[in-house]
Length: 163
Image 1 (spheres, rainbow, N blue to C red):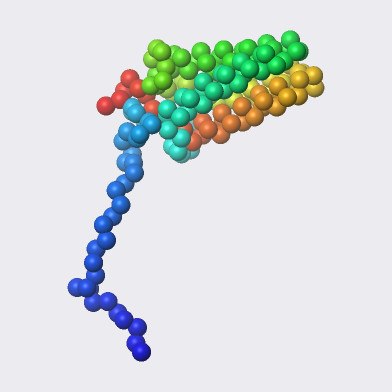
Image 2 (cartoon, one colour):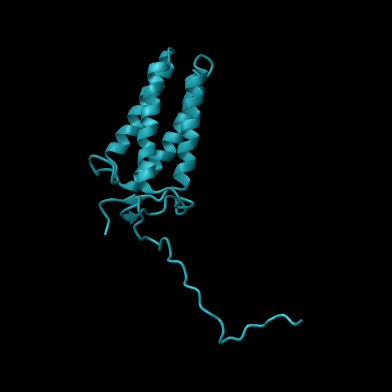
């Protein structure tokens, strides 16, 4: 038995699924104009919607604030307070939808995310509380690593420049 070779006139065109996103088009949780690439190539991808990233920023602030309450070492308390205040403060004034004032450009916020992540990783070792407060130090390091990784794949968008 010979295999059936379809006649070109028999072919039925299947409907193509709609594109989920076109370059620069608003998505469900990402509204506004795309950010300019940081250092010409960051973010590496745009997988995490801007609103989700915003909630993550506030979550990091809450996590760092909780570390203030758990730490007994004054260096760990000071680092936790600094990390909580810096990420929450920057988030409250960034040009994205979930902020109170749109003062800081989204590109500056993106650079701040990377800086905050490196600081969160480094502070336990620089200040030396990784020995006296290992749980707080681990919390800071994991939050820093998570922030850097998330920043590499966040769909950063400016709320003021939205369409």
